[in-house]
Image (tube, rainbow, N blue to C red; front, top):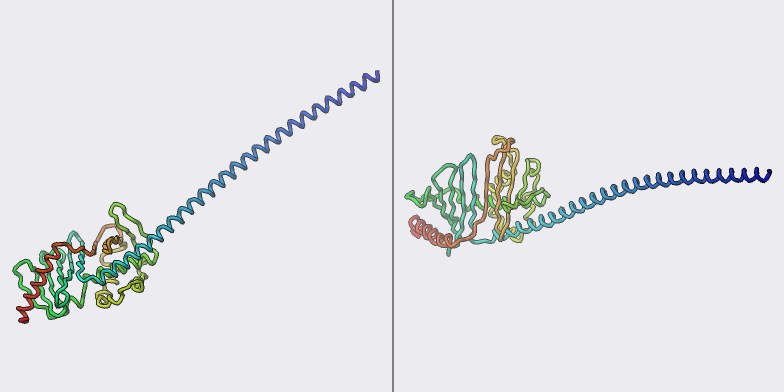
Length: 314
């Protein structure tokens, strides 16, 4: 009897142990599953964070790479402008062309130089807005003759006032444009490349360009001493003009386009009002000497010599 009771107690205890063990296993399993879920969530959160950080790092690296590339390009452009200006200052027979557009009308100015046995001949033509007349000048710096149309019957007249060689307006405009673009690049102004037009462009308001150092390029020039003939009041006026925003015209924004190829610089300045309307456009470039200009050179030199002989007898 006692043995039966002891056996019953042992069975009961064993059953309790099995039940407790089963409960413990269940709790442990649930705890492990809960831990796995939490661990999975933490891992996913960590993965997302690492992915975000990796993306941000890649974007930052890409930005730094783009900036480094543009900085390299910026320095290369500055060097090209320096070389273009140095080359121009040594050229004996450059041809500079300016075109200005405003209110649907155009003004055109050009300056050509021809070497003669007695010096340099300047051939300058100027056509004002809406005018059919073309003012033409021929000068060697000592004497100067002008006419309203050298292709017609208008007579040449001797100019006794300030000679063009004391002004050099067209050349100065071209030089100031190069100095301005170099100053803008040197100051770090942002620019873009317009693939369709194959030109570089930057835009600016008054505050962005008012402090530009127009002489930043001068220490980089090998032929800086050749700038002296161009340092006159017209140079000062041009430097002020390219940085000005005329209130009477309502100008609030300017876009500047430029390119350099084979040491030839081309520049366009476009003026806009607050409504985004284009008010004025100015283009300056150096033309390459063509066979026509070579033929034209002989005609211009002979014409000048004839005028001088008729005037002075020499």
